[in-house]
Image 1 (cartoon, one colour):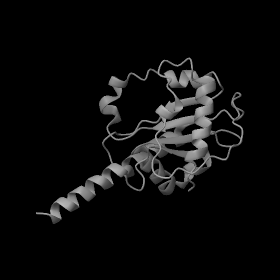
Image 2: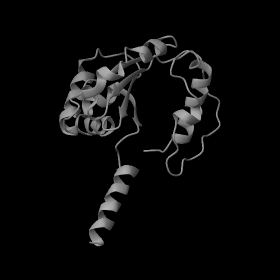
Image 3: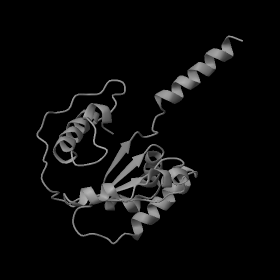
Image 4: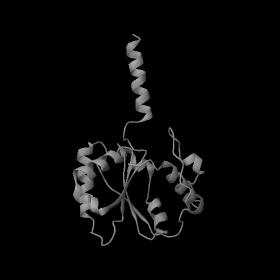
Length: 180
């Protein structure tokens, strides 16, 4: 596992600057991305802003409770429509929003295996948002048959290794318990 936040920031900001201006929710890169802890620097390599050469498909696994408030977000496929203009695609992998990672890993496995098998290099990029990240990691560990179909796994705000908010809460509870 590599910490590639710096390179991600370079790529994200370049793509946003080049291709995101016409999106209704576009905002400056520094407003869109938050630095957490020590973020390693990017490598400074140029960012290829041309159309996709590989036809990658982003399969997003949402976090806890997503299907409870999905209708409020009104996603309407706007991201997928935008990505298709550049030769990419996106889809949501449905999981049970309030279920365990073990349960959701099986759902991820079933969705991936139900997709038509592609010739050549894998094109599927699994993107886990929040709890979607441990769900994907469990699927990759427990169901090795999906690995050959996956080009990469990306954790976006992933609930992996804890979170600063949870750690702060636990520390506050510990202090409160010792000062009674």
